[in-house]
Length: 268
Length: 170
Image 1 (tube, each protein chain N blue to C red):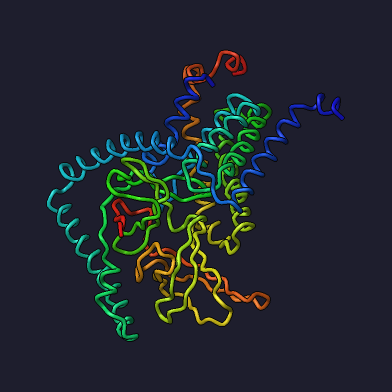
Image 2 (cartoon, rainbow over the protein chains, first blue to last red; image 1 turned 45 degrees about the vertical axis):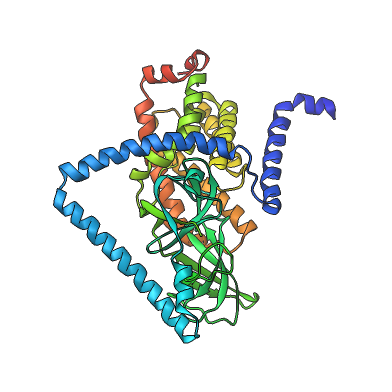
């Protein structure tokens, strides 16, 4: 036996390595993701990302402001800001109307929907078939803490996963490790929305619940992380299986994450 | 590869991937620079070195992301080993077929990860992911990787990157 292993030790070494990696991955399924070396890697990459994204932003700024039409650019920025504000107000108004119907207090809702926040810049987007994260320009020195929600005017982006002094990593809504409590805006049915890289999956929706393509999912606030009423995703596909007590619901985030450049971290 | 090349690769590849390639993203899809690096190492060095480099770069990518530690190490290690075998027996750095193999590696890796996600979490919208993400990413990685390989194919560049023991094989 040992002679056989000795003759084929390279093959056994490779097999041992593969088995070890497989064990490492499957262990985390139950115990949660290991967090070793996370901070040094984020510190190093954050340092270089700051340099490279800063250099790129400077070049882009020179082009946009001085080479490309100055007035048009400024007006475009102003109009985009106006549009974002109107969009958010519109979403929140719909929520407030529904709250009124159930005799909830508007003031309490507004307090919850407008907590204090920190403006951040997106420094980098990680590319991996197994995960979706971004790096933001503020960290623990600026009051950013783990699990704080990150949003833009259109809705939810994700939550802070790791923080350092001057930068943080945000786990996006579409990351498989991300889950949040949502509610169907139309009929107030609750569910758990999990990331699936390019889409999201709404889990544990009973076979008998009325859910339709086009339904807007908003945060329910039940997870204790996200404030209530923020737009999250739109249902794009609903499948019912006779053998399963649950429906398979696929949703697409309302925020086009690849296009955002700034975001807000909600600190309360 | 020379040790300083590996050092530079390990320090710079993730910041390059996440910040500089961001503006090159089309509809949110960027080429997988880490996979391209592993593939290049495979072609230039051989299966053993590429597998080890793939595992190490995969670990780095895992730590830098929010995914399970070891998943990308496993897939990149396998990609490096396969690229090393291809480089030893079939392909060279200037071959136009690299576009197909790189694309296939990218797609294969994404399929493995998707299968894993389906096993762990369930409810993975397979066809949505295939057409919205996996296939475009594979095509983009294949095209971008081939461009990188074309830029690297001069003898001087290869001598700069690789150890003398490896250069004998060119």
